[in-house]
Length: 275
Image (cartoon, rainbow, N blue to C red; front, side, top):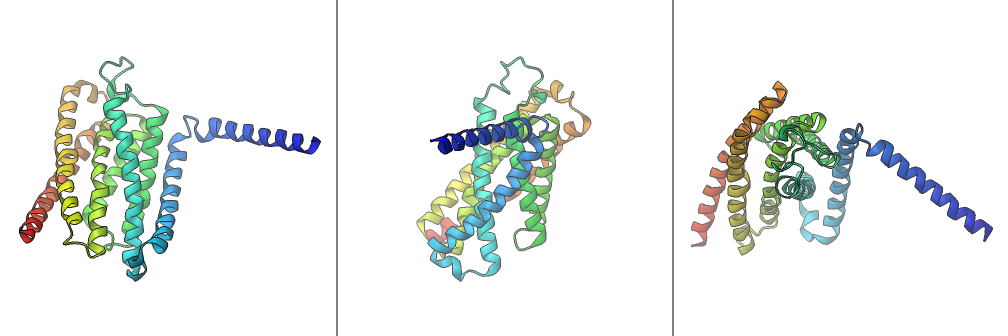
């Protein structure tokens, strides 16, 4: 009984020390940007390895892929998980949380932030840095110049918002567009699995069309309208933050329109073949 009691006390002591470490250092406000970025990058590595392990066991066609196809398969698993995480988080902060509500009188809307919102952005920064590194390392196998531009702008804008706390609302508005990533990845998975003529491929293409229209076209229009309504508050941001609020979404919106044209063309082509 004495040994058992001593072991219990020792366990409680270690648990208390761990809680203090997490509270005072890992999740302390000054350290959140750094621990969240590191955690996001490490999570990407973990998910990449798990995707590889699970696919080897449960997907028969995985072992028949080329080396670069396996890399892209695993990489898309990472981007899908990040997209689900940041889309849900962004939707919560933009539409359900009181943090950025106009009814909230806690300071200017462009300067509002919280430990949770900063942590979420840090995880996203960790992902963008990791994915950008892979794209550059294996260029152009995982994406061309447009992917490098997209990820670079995203990493810079999200990093600035995370570190300064400025413009987090507009950062989350833009990050909602990641909701289209799982459908895009599913399109690639179906293609690589030889199911390009299946009903699943057609349905997924239709879902991509509407999701892209809402999340990457109409939502950007709403964001620019919101910026217009709060222009006086946006003008009080630092010059670099002000430029990011206008410059990055404008560039991404232009790219989204170009990609939307390709999606529409591809959908028409698929429907024509089906007919």
